[in-house]
Length: 394
Image 1: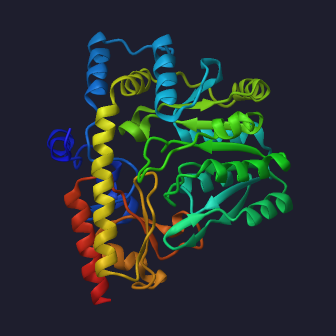
Image 2 (image 1 turned 90 degrees about the horizontal axis):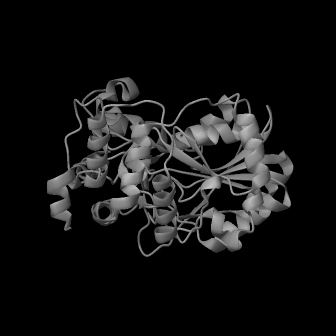
């Protein structure tokens, strides 16, 4: 499928459809007339296999209590093996309504009030909230930004874990919004630190299917031939891959029997939610029949990012468009053109854009913005035009 064929077939108008991205701008940003380049979902219909599977489920007409079928577990296992060379077993899998909910359950089950939880900033802001809202102590270590790329500071990570007696490390892999697809060597180093200090690791891998530039995603489960599994819980979902966030379905993968027993025992008092039949149906259909659609989508995202980077480098050479090895949400550092304290006024009042602001992801990242590339190329072009034009006026 060519890029134009994909756009002709799947690009859709989302305004007026109860879209958080478009129809809650007044609530979230105080202005209704902004060009929405924020929140991680898409202006694209999901793949045909999912739409057809949901139609069949609707035609059946029953939405009662449901369970994951053998076919679901097989589809998930095949996807993980085929695309990520990752072995899974159905006995390892538990379910949640989303990856943020899953992370919250891990925090609640495996840590106590006041325990320290580590994040690497800038990172997806629900990581911050999940720790603080559950009465745990948030410990932050900034990633190091150099030459348009973020890296881990292992010395700082180890120091933070040791000094704060960190009980849980929330890993984001691929990292949102730093755009990094961590190599196995990088993951091995940070997981080894956690093992030495007896810190549990929860790896959020929701963006696992979005890698670019020849980068290969390494599931934390497979690092070192699985040697960290006794200290590891993975969460992932088809929701980002196939644009299914509102269908409320995610997996926790707990391969260690001891951790699994603890989770099963403690989760009973925290989560009594049954599975979403629509979420199960959609995810299975995506795993079984969504690869052609996904590859075409990634082509659109790749081209959008290359346009953003090329135009910004040419017309705003002091701005930094960070590497997007993974996810579809690159960071842009505009501090050379806009004072950090004036970023909101610049972006919303002048450029008329809705973006995710850098300080949402980490206190030291004011002056950065995150832009969504999983959208209409015309919207990306318009957003870049506005940023360039108004930067020149500033």
